[in-house]
Image (cartoon, rainbow, N blue to C red):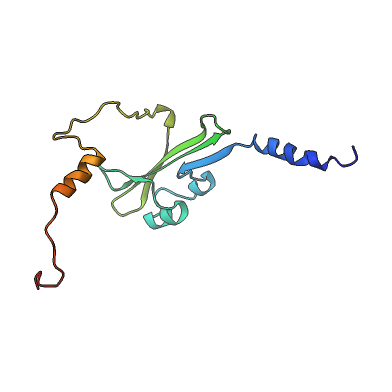
Length: 151
């Protein structure tokens, strides 16, 4: 075997199949940047410039911002595995200055699962063909062009 280069491509392909796909969802805050947010000193503008816009603002109090993020790894067709997640709450006072910065415990978060029931609707259920034939049997009035709707 003088030239083993034909084995390099399959070997590289096999090794790359073992590399996970990393996905970031939301906003993973860098903790080195988060320590720069100082309660009693930092303003809303500083927070936005350092951390970006919040993922969510409290519906009850607009002075509470949330930065929530999750990182997952997935190997080929297997289910993704959560490798890192965080939730940061920043509360501002009435002057727009940071009052508190909290790292929330995401292990206490509840999973929200969709319900497997249907909402009842009234009327008849039309198929595509019935809708098509219904449009043909009830033609719409001819609309004339023009600003005054006529002539």
